[in-house]
Length: 294
Ligand code: TA6
Image 1 (cartoon, rainbow, N blue to C red):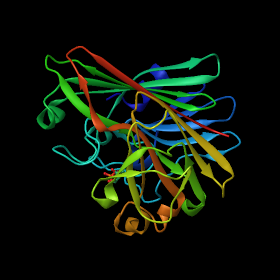
Image 2 (cartoon, rainbow, N blue to C red; image 1 turned 180 degrees about the vertical axis):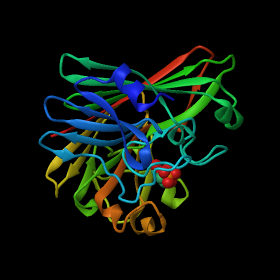
Image 3 (cartoon, rainbow, N blue to C red; image 1 turned 135 degrees about the horizontal axis):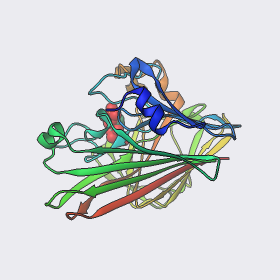
């Protein structure tokens, strides 16, 4: 794990610097000439802020988010691999709870910034999940925030996984939010024993706890925020599903969620959650998400 000085010497430029963030966790701070910015912690490969010039902060971060080794950071864009949700591994896998390496940083077209982070197996992960792998995140800050999610099977055995970019969006008031693009899909309703449920709403709205895996969702979904008067567009490639979640008043039991935090957020996650991705030795899987605002 490189220290701050080495990171800045190796990758720093006039748009990117590494600083000590919360609890002295190292984060990259990206700033474009157009006035957009993003914060990316090496811990978890975790984007915690995306500010678009003219629109303000687009991502939700809990005021009580914990920056502790072994714990997930509550908010931003947790990276979920090799397991979405519960199962034989820790909930949502283990890469969000580990240090990633920065392997490259460059300014594109004189204005956009691309940072590549990588995590590989180590003795801890091999105990949990006995497969060598590489997971790279190519994060590009332009007028939008683009993330390429690239898994390589670097071992000699095939493996399978589920995944997600577990994105927490900041909203003005969850009761004044609508999500479009889901009508006609079937979702697994985790609030109702994973019942296969048809989505009948053109403009899905929310008034209670929801936790839904929309299978084979379209590659574009929109978040309409009436209170903040903005539309966030989530576009994805090769992430087959969209997962929507808000704990509602249940968040009172979550010690890393501040009071009434549920009112200010919605998770719309791009992932492969309902079906596993199979990867042969040497094979590469890539998926991407682009979020933008208008
Ligand atoms: O994506 C929705 C979900 O799977 C919910 O079921 C809930 O567990 C949420 O993720 C948060 O999980 P976490 O492990 O980050 O508390």
